[in-house]
Amino acid sequence: MIDHALFDPATIDPETKRLNAEIVAAHAAQADPWSLPIAEVRAR
Image 1 (cartoon, helix red, strand yellow):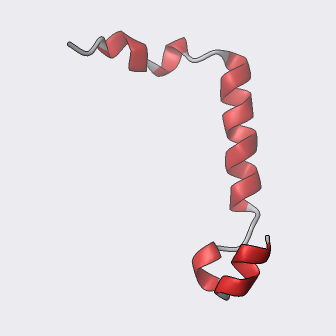
Image 2 (image 1 turned 90 degrees about the horizontal axis):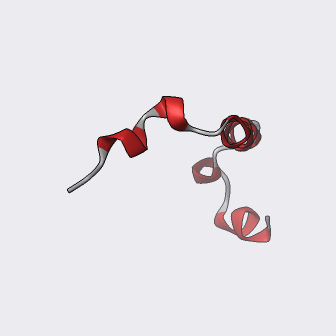
């Protein structure tokens, strides 16, 4: 059985929330990899 309380956003550690927001912002600032030539994606 799945404990749904484990998925409650209120239980997420503030440091984890901050880190996740940082990761999302870093990815959002980059070009969409699907719009780049495959050679450039592989070089990154």
